[in-house]
Length: 130
Image 1 (cartoon, rainbow, N blue to C red):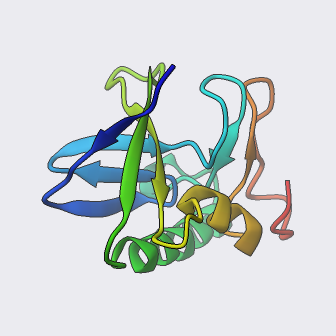
Image 2: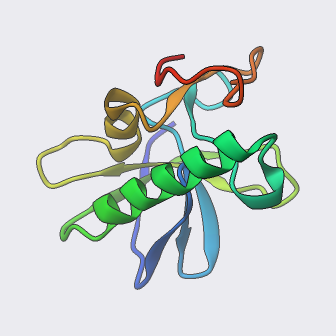
Image 3: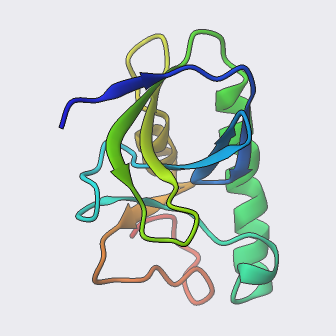
């Protein structure tokens, strides 16, 4: 698949691994491969399994919001959509220095690796790693 560039007039953080581009939710891949690998951040609000996950989700969303405020971001659609009912496009967002935002969140400990056969437990582990 060849990546397709996306242009957004408005780009905001929905949670730590989802952005809204002109009203359309999009899921960050973090340089992963659709349906094989990617990043995962804690669930926000009522989707959280515990208060710790809810707090971590707000922190991750705040960091993503900071990164999205940078000028010159490049959004690339992988050509795939996720398997949720809303079929969010799976995207990578690159900073002007070439660094992918989802991968940065992973390196900074705001996200963990995602794989289809494992769900991250944000409630029973305080470590930032997978």
